[in-house]
Length: 160
Length: 160
Image 1 (cartoon, each protein chain N blue to C red):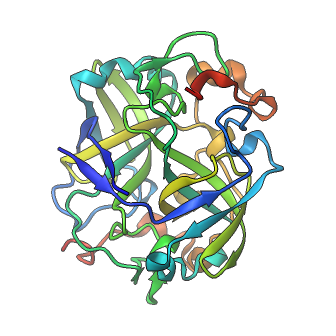
Image 2 (image 1 turned 135 degrees about the vertical axis):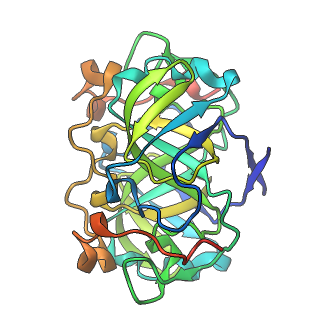
């Protein structure tokens, strides 16, 4: 079974290569960028201005490797890929929660960005705490790394 | 540009049709189900047991309609599709945070499920509060509906 999607837009960011990116949006609050929605889909942005945070779902277009276990940035052991957020996944789908600063027509200015420039966007969903918020979630192997995420930047591991 | 993905598994749930489903996992805590990962990908589940919550990314395989505006379950006005979680999206990608109860080999028992039986699974990511948690997010048009989500069930609107 093949499932085919099409980009609804593209991410413009300061990150030109996979090296030296924040490993998740909260990893570095200082970067902002623009999410550009293609004309055919701009009507779908109606009312999005009211949300302070949005979920971006995108395609890791520069990642060619697919693995089932990986040594994550924050660890030294092989972990199952589905227990990590590494991009080298069977289906290279990215997920980031970013802060929506401003909408100007088909362009969304966002903060807390961790996405490579030129990344094809698949979907935008509003972030809704009542649905998406699990403050007390247990985080397995990442427990040791809690608190270190904000300081950490990526290395060459997934830059293929 | 076409982007092609393949199912890594399938969701088994008590929801046999799109009517009368909880509109999001927190909408009804009582339903549980099983996420079955196909043999080729089981190795990727290593270490997932440590996480209490996981993010399921899946394909709305029964949804044929694609629209740019929609009247959401919790509202009476047309809203931009990207300002809603409705399934009738340009790329029908679903996203749910569910509670991981137990792993048995290639099967994950989960709670807080809102996914149709037979849904093809595209990805699993660990839920990590440090990445995914925005407790104070503003929720735009949904502000009026806050608190009503838990009581609400879907109707025939998207069962097409």
